[in-house]
Length: 158
Image (cartoon, rainbow, N blue to C red; front, side, top):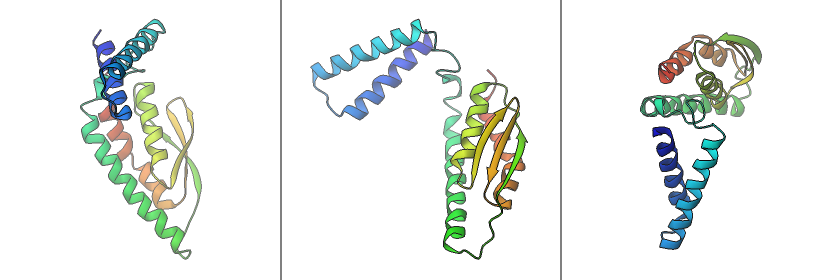
């Protein structure tokens, strides 16, 4: 029941932020659409730890700033390589193991790699990710396992 309430609050908050209209009629229509959406999601059995992972919400406040900083650093590196053709580019594909216990954790890890410029997750096979990296440095950054460990801490125990 807590997941249903949490989903409803998140949907209502997003609706209010995006609509920008606070007339009683429109708020009533928004609440009605949120209730209908939560009811449909409940009937489809998609309000679970995978579909609405509220158990990791508080840890997001430490993980996402770190990820944002990694994205900025990688952006600067890729921009330097684009603007300075003399800097080396050595594309490569490699596999890295994942230590996440859930599909949500693996998805967060794969997407975090892809969000970081210069690296793209191209396949997930069991507990392995196939990654394409633009440079040796970006490949080494993924291979160190720092991001994997961060995502595992972010995922926590389910």
